[in-house]
Image 1 (cartoon, rainbow, N blue to C red):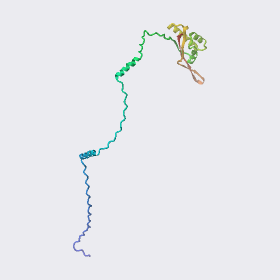
Image 2 (image 1 turned 45 degrees about the horizontal axis):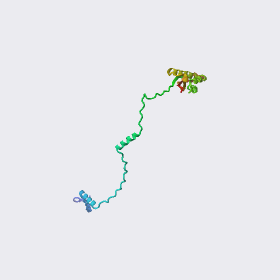
Image 3 (image 1 turned 30 degrees about the vertical axis):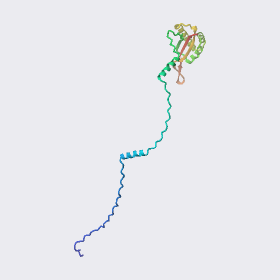
Image 4 (image 1 turned 135 degrees about the vertical axis):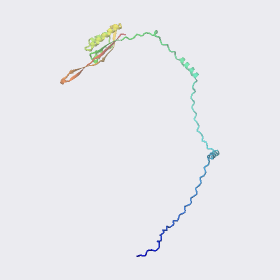
Length: 218
C-alpha cells in the first residue's frame, strides 16, 4: 500500500500578478470666454463710434419737375360761357297744334282676298304677272283672253275688289288701277291612287291664297 500523505494538504494559493495602473493624462484648463459687454455699454459704444466716424451721405437723385395741369376754369366763368353758347343757337320752333296741321289726304287702297283656291300658287302667279300695275279695264280684257284655269279665279277676285271700292269708299271702278297682286301657297290636300303590283301613289292637290289691291288713279 502506498504511503498516505502526512498531515493536512497544503492549500494551493493562486497568485495573480498585479496590473500596474496607468496615470490619467492631466486635463487642459478651459479657456475662459470673454465676458460679453452689457447691452447698455454696447449701445453707448455704437453711439460714440457713430459720432466719431459719420457715415458718408449719398447724394439723392434730383426729382423731375411734374407737368403742371391746365388750370380748370372757375364755375362762374363756365356759367357765363354756357348762356353765350345758348344764345347763338336758334330758338326751336314750337310744334304745330292739331288744329293748325294740314290734313294730308290718306292713300286709299281697296283689298280683296280669295282663300283655298284649288290651283297651285305657281300657276296663279303666271296669270297675275300680266295684270300687275294695269287699269281695271285693261285687266278685265287680259283675264278674259287668257287661256288658263287660274284666270277665272283672278277675274272673280278683281270684280270683288271693284265692288268693295264702290260700296265702302264710293269709288268708280273705271278710275282704279291694280297696285299689287299676290298668290301665296295654301294647304295641300293629300290623296292616293292605285298603281301596278298593288302599290299606291300619293297625289298632292295644291291650294293657294290670292290677294289683290286697287287704288284710284292720280
